[in-house]
Length: 101
Image: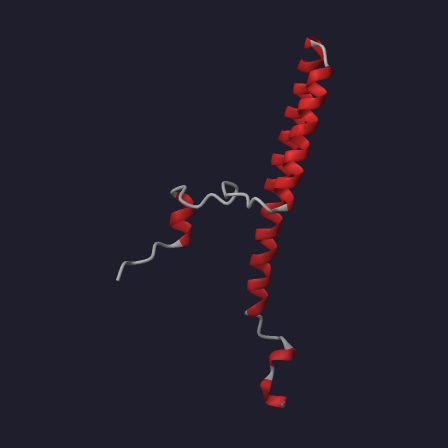
């Protein structure tokens, strides 16, 4: 039987990359992504060269904001999950006291 690698080792070595997952064809994310791409193309066709540069800067700033937001949400979610796990081990939880049942 092959020994399973530990998740922290896999994460450290870059074998786990949550943000690089395939997007299902029927997902809401893909639908919105396609709409955004179509709108970007339509706007780009109407802009001057100078306006396109400004529009590209706007898109880049939006992308940076989205990346920062994703990282922040990931961190908050991970910390919340860890706190939930820690709460499981608290000994003063009256709901888990089986002596009174």
